Structures are given as structure tokens and as C-alpha cells.
Length: 212
Image 1 (cartoon, helix red, strand yellow):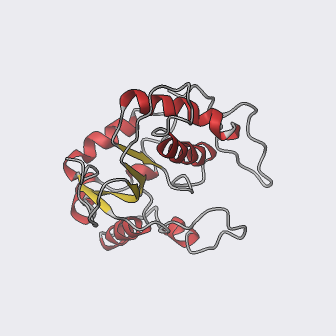
Image 2 (cartoon, rainbow, N blue to C red):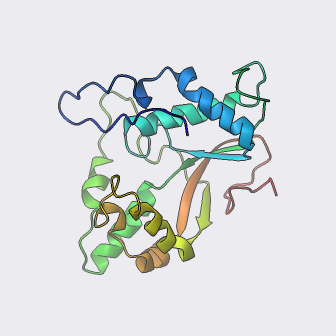
Image 3 (cartoon, rainbow, N blue to C red):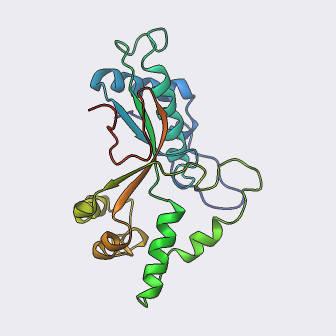
């Protein structure tokens, strides 16, 4: 949609440089302009993105966060990105909370109680450590404001994710907990409402609360 090259997930110490021309190294306005155009074209009321940490610190996820915040702020201003179409102002900006520590803890303890191996222990322990350079907020820096009850659709969600075989291991971390256990323990998708241009009453059960 935006036309940029995947930056990949660098590994090593020190980390190698990101590929020249990849998404994460683009100037912000250049990367955001295509999204501003799409927002003005499709006119969404709600935008959902990663938090500052990218969910986890993948360079493209972090850049996607920056681009989404820029587009939310700029799309309604006709003086900004004047070549990207007629101004349109979205109403609400959310951050996805799929990596919520509360959710991970609940699933971790449910697995342990069932006598099953939990993939969350190491990640939960790592989250207790402070980023020495202070580059990213710790998980949980944005409180969950909005929970969508969507347990009936977990199988469809997981099937869609498994279709991206180059991105996820179909036997890996994301599928460690059965849909049945998730429905019992944590049947929601979690979000943080970051900005709202309409009155909002928290907590919410609908991303379109205040807009219907």
C-alpha cells in the first residue's frame, strides 16, 4: 500500500545497519505522505496502530507507529500534504495492545495451572528490565481503555495469521494457547485510546463508541 521495502529485523551486537531505502529509514514526511493520501481517500473514522515500541521493537513496526500518528494529525489539515487529496479528519486513534502484559500474565498462569509449557515466562521477565537508553516506553505504558469481545472469531484470526507463513511459525509462539483457553481466560482484543476528537467514556467496548 505504501510502496516501501521491508526493513527486516536486524540481529547482532552491535546491530547491523538497516537496508538503504527501506521503510524504517525513510524521512517521516516521505513515509507518511502515502498514508495521508489513503486516509483522505478512504475517510476512516478510526485509526489503529502500534505503540511507540512497535508492539515489540521491529524497525518497521516502530516506523508504522510514527507514520500513523503523523497521518492522524495531518490528514485533516489542508495546509499539510496539499498534494495528497482533500483533507479528512479521522476521529479516534488507538494503539493495539496485543502484547499487553496483563494478557500475557493471565495466559501464562492458565497454562501453568493446566500443566502446559508457557512461552511467556521469558518475555514477562524481560519486560521487568528497564531500557538502559530509555528509547521506548515499557509495555503497559499505555493503559488498556478498550476491550472488544471477539472470542468467537479467534479461529478465523489465527487462520489469517497462519496464511503469512514467511512471517510467523504456524507452530510457534502466537499459537501456543488454544482458542478455547483464550476464550475462557482472555476473550478480548485490547486497545488504548490515545486521541479522540469526539467525547469518549472509558472504558469502552467498541472502537466506534461515540461515532455511531
